[in-house]
Image 1 (cartoon, one colour):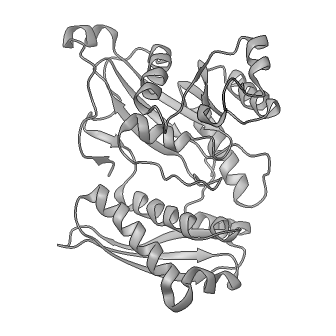
Image 2 (cartoon, one colour):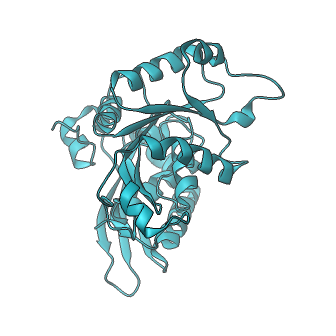
Image 3 (cartoon, rainbow, N blue to C red):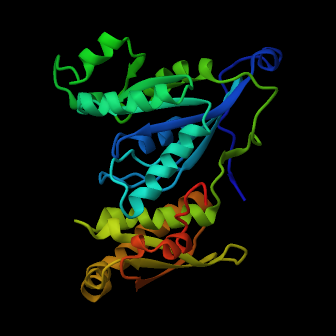
Length: 316
């Protein structure tokens, strides 16, 4: 079932005003890999629901985060990074991103300040083609020193692209306020919230555990290894005094197995320790996490294996 821990609600409006002007809807966060979508969503929610890594293509499936305000409920959907390649798992990632846009009420285009004009044009076209209300958010503004402007700034001015520039890491509260001020007015009016106001994500704890394990893999593995790795939860016993989770790290190449395990098991032990801490922070209690490694050669090229590992295209 979806996770609820506390209500992240409140901006001081009266109940009578809320009823008359309440808005609710789905907001798609789209952008290139590493545009800062996951970081922004976590910052807005004040809860970690989407995994974060400096490596691109960390997000593989849509991740939802629910923000409850007095006058609105916003269901943010963090989509996989937009790619041009459609080989292997990239086909799934592209289909996921498109489906997220198709089912959104509002589209937020996230562009890192160091993005190219071509990337900006491609993403803005996706937003305009969706026929949904949209806004562009320039992230990582701290990457630009002094008076430097993004390479796509001239295009934005020429086409009168509506945008807001933020730095989530350095000015979190300011970034949150800026994004909400743009997004809330674009949401459709609603008779009430779409989800219970105690929920902050539609992900289950089982799904989040798999993602936290994959995040730890991205942080501790290098080169192409994490991109050919998937996580499968084989056992999740949440009703025990100490919840027990048994998971497999599924690899595409046999020569990656030794890398993942590490010398005397040091790497997989570190992955397990970091993942366990993340899981415990959400569950609010100690858990027992057991990791195993399995090789499934070229699993990302195998439709049956893709489905087994949860990478199912929206139309399937």
